[in-house]
Image 1 (cartoon, rainbow, N blue to C red):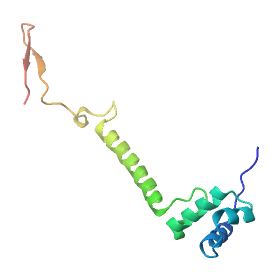
Image 2: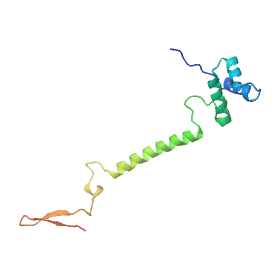
Image 3: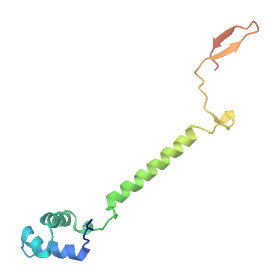
Image 4: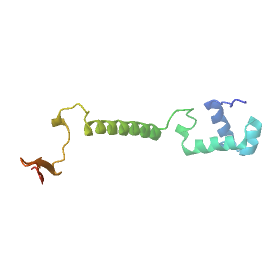
Length: 120
């Protein structure tokens, strides 16, 4: 299996300058550099979209991508904390557990009859 070629940031910038500043067309510049035209076209587009963020390297996020990753992590952590507080552990004292006061309870009278009533 062939390994992918890796090009330095400087090489990519020089290749893009051939097209943008020196007037070469993409096909000619790619052929002279030993690249596929689509690779050079992608580099030119990436450079023109945001010059400062172009050619960051593998795994390096943009500012927005980094913020999105941080917010997703914070959201995951907050949901976990909420769920922990929402459902106390089984051995917790009864005063810590949520009760549903609107649910009717059954009370037994001395004659053994069960009667529903609301506890206020």
